[in-house]
Amino acid sequence: MTLAETLSLLLFGGVCIGLMAGFPVAFTLGGISLLFGLIGNALGAFDLSFFGFIPNRIYGVMTNEVLLAVPLFVFMGVMLERSKVADDLLNTMGALFGTMRGGLGISVCVVGALLAASTGIVGATVVTMGLLSLPTMLRWGYDPKLACGTICASGTLGQIIPPSIVLVVLGDQISNAYQDAQRAMGNFAPDPVSVGDLFAGALIPGLLLVGLYIGWQLVMAALRPEAAPAVSEADAIGDVSLVKTLGALMAPIVLIVAVLGSILAGVATPTEAAAVGAIGATLLGGLRLTRGGQGTMILIGGLALIGVLFLTGTLDLRLGRSEITAAERFGIYAAAICCLLLAVGILDALRRTHADGTLREVMQQTAKISAMVFGIVIGAQIFSLVFRGLGGDDIVHEFLTSLPGGALGAMFVVMLIMFIMGFFLDFIEITFVVVPIVAPILLMMDINPVWLGIMIAINLQTSFLTPPFGFALFYLRGVAPPSVKTMQIYAGVIPFVGLQVLMLAILWLVPEMTLWLPRMVYGTVAGG
Image (cartoon, rainbow, N blue to C red):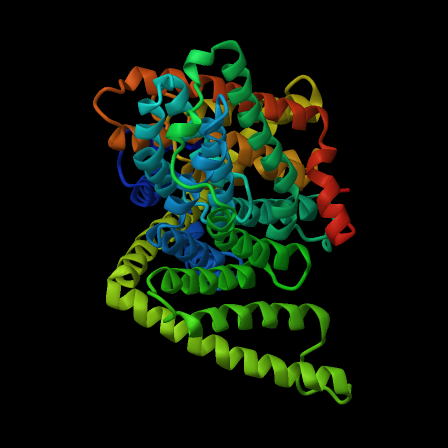
């Protein structure tokens, strides 16, 4: 092994140690990489000209429209969390399912799925459900381990159920890796891999994972009734009227349909759909703060938003064409009116959320999370340059291609390494450190990029659950009552980690589950 290759391995190990020690991710990635680059140059093993690519890499991040979806989805999620949509959902679902054995656990799983598809922010979801659901589940005699495991697992569904920030970031990385792999094999015009492909590919596995969680609740209720008791009719949690149920479900479902439906229907790109989600969340936040009939303009704005999406999906509204039919001209005028009404509704919603102080909190939280993500992106670009400049990618390529079992053997080892790293590192760190290194090599072995992306996404989801450093465990520990012990939280998530491993095994054996919907929606999928 050459000196440069030894330094590349030491660089990777040093970054992992720095991350596990708790140093800021962006500074760890960038700082240690710069240090090893200088050391390598002093020893004659690294060319400093590689650092000349850093400005181009950063500019590429700045002009990447796919990554623009990150702050928009973050804004959507934080706005919905601050507007108490989760509170209504949890109370309503608890009343709806609470009277059956395991019903409270099922309601937490359902709410976790709905919040995942409308917010996608794990920390906020786990904390919210921990504050609202955990005391209720414990009060009605639920086993603390089952209650904690259910809340932690359901809170992480935002990692896999689209629209997901993880899928946006991972989709960008997989797309770049697929382009690199195809160019290395001599194909300079490959079919693109989009974030929409991953959204469509993740939908069925995500819903199946929710089904596995609910199935576990039913199994526990049957085998250990005392661990998941029912709430008596006389003591049912709140009112379960049809009007209240529809009112609680309507907001997240409409937003899910508007965002995810516009992507799958081809009306909007993921970035454009993220903007729709941010607007919809703002309108819902403003509507939540209204009293009496004061929210009329916000409701009209919401209807106008739906109207714009409908007109965009059914008519060609482009201006400046030589021929425009009467129907299209009518659609253009109608869309202009809808946009005007939508603007008035947004301004009213912004006024209300600003007066309440909610908008300020949402903007600050969005800025913090987005700055953290893009800081990590820049640090990861520096790490990638130095690692490749030291020849580290050649070591990884030689290691993976020499494994027994060919492509599947290499895939198994990569999944195992990511699973183990999930015990210590966050999904963002793994996405930006490991995926750019291993994904191009795996994709050169004729592995489908969409299937690979979904497998990695579900694997990364375990990084929030696996003891002892799973972030979801820390989130719940911070809001759980003192009567709940840390070891009970750890023990409670073990079955759900097992269910996720089972989900990975199912997708391994039936990869078509991730490819069927993208083929149905888009007609073709990159990689076959």
